[in-house]
Image (tube, rainbow, N blue to C red; front, side, top):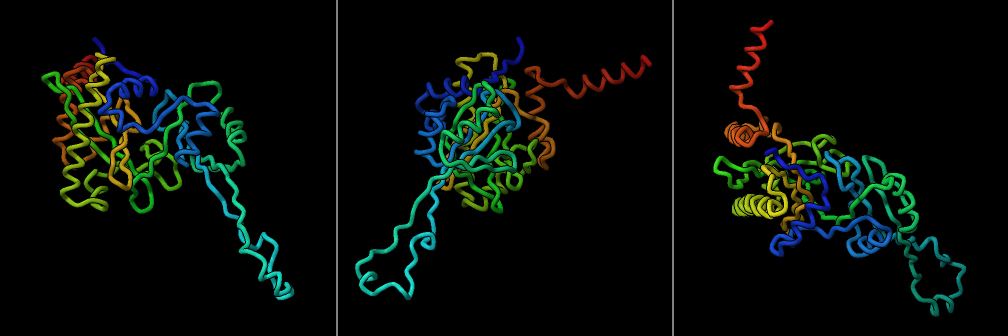
Length: 295
């Protein structure tokens, strides 16, 4: 039996939401519509609009609802020519408020004056495909650049779920997403968290991440019994709460080979060979040797 892959983010989200203990980690997520866009912006101020199917952060956009306060200089000025009685009778000038909607994608940004205008600009990008709207989470940052975490969970040699690796991804300057393929940088989780947490809290958070990986995998397996590996994209907000942004059923493995601790990648590779994701190093060497002899 091959390794099962699930490309629909919405399908995976619905399965996880069936588990009340895990649903608390999911930012509010809905299928894209003008109504959902306006409502979630009104509640959260920032949302992400992303394709239901896609990898490497391709097509992900961020939308912000901002209230602009017009300066008092745009009101009727009060100057030395204003009679004293008018000053006495007048109240403080009322600053006008204006709501704007900012669409960010890649390194570009556009501003709109209403959800309807924003929606009209999004439609050519969506092109009739299924898109999702997700509550925006304020991410912890490294040097003013937001980061999230990738947690890798695999079936081990006993057939049980085990979290085998995790890393941090720091967004490229002015980028909406943190993905390595979009210019993000890879860091160890400890290096990123030590700027925000005590050593004890880091230890607790890492244990929570490992446990979350196992629990999410087990929940998804109830609907998709052929899963063998998953990659969780996890955000940590300023209160240090964990948020599950997305689950990838074809997670990158090779990136862990660049880590100083080679034992981590050896275990990841060993498990991937056991369930059929990768060939063993030995069998690959034998195959190359045999091909060379045939020349």
